[in-house]
Image 1 (cartoon, helix red, strand yellow):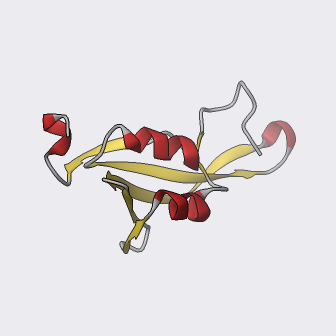
Image 2 (tube, rainbow, N blue to C red):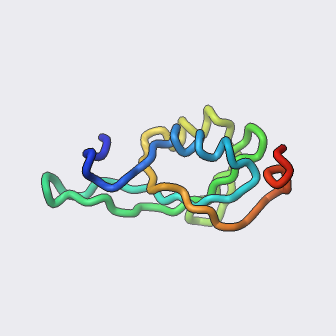
Length: 103
């Protein structure tokens, strides 16, 4: 279920993982969405906000409950593979200094 070309921009879990890959150590907020209704009245409704940080090969995912889990890239895709997200937004929180020094 992908958005129509004229619809709002949404990203897949694989695209989010790739996005995070170039920004290790930085925290991003991404909201899962689902399609509600049918036809021309269909809208993308927000479901759950998540915070994501890629540290090395591990994705730290903090869900709506505030619980953080560490997921391998493979496990991340298993958990979120069928999800669509609004584009990720930086929270301004850095979990380490690696990105500042190109590491």
